[in-house]
Length: 151
Image 1 (cartoon, rainbow, N blue to C red):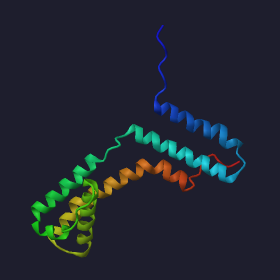
Image 2 (cartoon, rainbow, N blue to C red):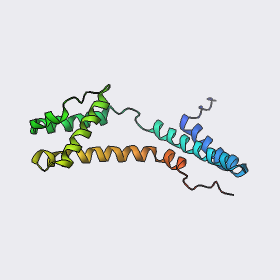
Image 3 (cartoon, rainbow, N blue to C red):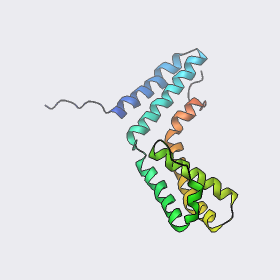
Image 4 (cartoon, helix red, strand yellow):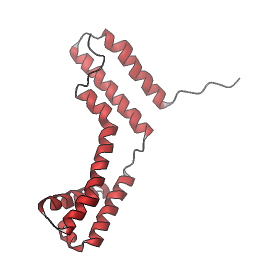
């Protein structure tokens, strides 16, 4: 008879969340302990989301770099906006350049600014939304999301 498989990391984390919610929280009278337990649950739920998804941001950076390269190809005058925007990492540089271009688009009314608003802005908004959705379990727990923590 084959040996049973070990639980997955996700199953272990789900079990920890379940134990905290159903065993510890109902028996904690201290408000701070209850808040800490709720925050720990949010952190564990965030860990589950990290494990389930791709922890690398290379695809996001690639997309931002491609959008910026397209803008520069179509509007070479935007090169001046990006002067001095080298960062420590590829991701930092891409986001700093995106920030500079978006700031430029706010203050200008030109075809280049229109292109920034049409091409780069929706990409950055979508990436920010995706990141927020991924981190929401933890953020809500730390922000006091209502759960079954009240007596």
